Image (cartoon, rainbow, N blue to C red; front, side, top):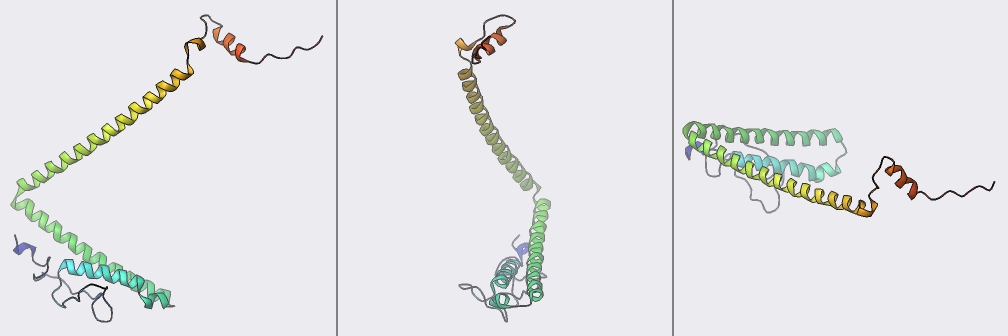
Length: 180
């Protein structure tokens, strides 16, 4: 399996990788605290990191800040971003290929991972259901408390067909009488 990881990690020869020009390369300063990259022995991780640093440095570079040609700035930034996206796709393809190899060589491992993911998802959803049930019980209690406050035993209307109207008219202020 170690030989199948070639080109991914430092100290290994990349398979079909292309050198990246970026920070630390000719004409561009690297980030402070980063070691210069050896040319010609880049792995996918190194290329991804270098392309990300190139994107970042192109956005904060004094050349771009002081530049007046907006189209040139946009083109340079677009090229850096496109290179980063290309290397990110290559890295994704690398991991997808390794995943495919693992599924062919050890299908039981993939099943174990799937079962573990499903258990984790069930636990997460169960916790979510419990959280919503707690909120539901809280609001039901609030509603019961509110309905209990508005309906006191003395406020109950007397029985009869016109009880509601009698209660409503009793709560209205009395109208002043007109002198005749």
